Image (tube, rainbow, N blue to C red):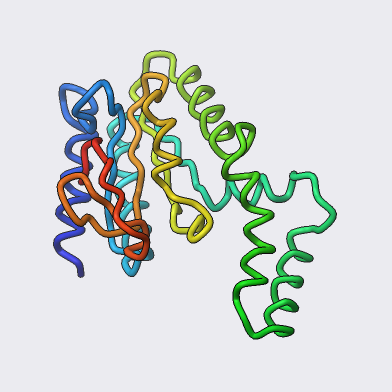
Length: 205
């Protein structure tokens, strides 16, 4: 058992179920928080996270989980394009078999992912619409949003781009589960592979 991760998850839960209200943010300029965990602990964190959600629900707190893998696949299924998702996967395999090089198959997948991840009507819009609907339906009840499965977007996206629009969370408490490595007080390396981005100012667990 990873005791350090369990402790941080417990700290997060305590701040969510705090008697004076959800306490996961520390600044109006950064109204969300980041839970950092090693990518190798993905399945451990998922299992513990599911347990935590059940405990939070018992406290009468509504929860919205935005699974980035599901969001991305849904957008892929509804995108304009000549190839289905299965055909894209097959083309990727064929290109690798032809060249034994990852460059060409990567380019194919990147061309498909880029509009979904970068365009204004892509994944950012989808997430904000879900948050707005959730906030509207709370009707005064306590609620929190968890954004999960960020590792699915690697290596096509930098999560720092995704976090920029969370500076306007529509009054919601938001926790972003971040697979990566914390290299300093404000620096994170996505998946522990990309060069650290030093512009992270929200509260980190």
